[in-house]
Amino acid sequence: MSAMISSWSPDKKHSDVERWICIYPAYLNNKKTLAQGRRLPKDICVENPTHQEIRDVLFSTGLRIGVENKLYPREKSKEMLYRGRIRVEIKNDDGKPINEEYPTRESVMRFIVESIPKLKTRQNRPADQQPQSVQQGSNKAKGKKGRR
Image (cartoon, rainbow, N blue to C red; front, side, top):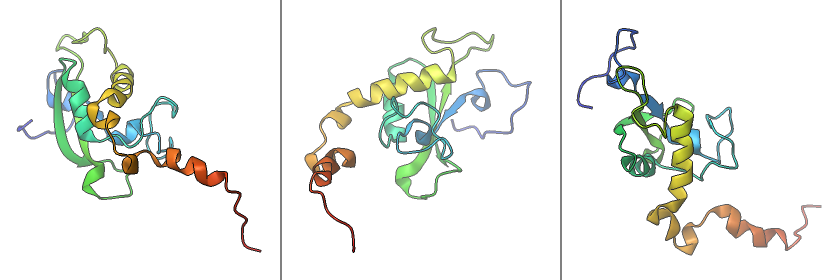
């Protein structure tokens, strides 16, 4: 990935980095709306995926991947947590899929959202870092009244 990426051209081969698919963490985040960039149904997406988790999951597929320090254009926060774009080569120069299990961009993204919850970093979270929706369930039962 040390070569500089130029603009897209139909003359480029599928092996050129410019032709690889791009995956931003926002595509797979169940906290985002479709307008904010989520690309898959909310019920199968994961909570706040990072580019490191996506990279770790894709490493096992045998596909060539690259990590770029880019920020998703629709992302409001400029923090480092939201940075990162993953590029994945899914086709050979002849246009055939490198791995028959992942012929399309959507199949790669579906594999990622199925695999991220299985990561050790996701399974061994301390109680204070659990998703907030789990912790808030007990607060709703108290029946607090609003201002009068």
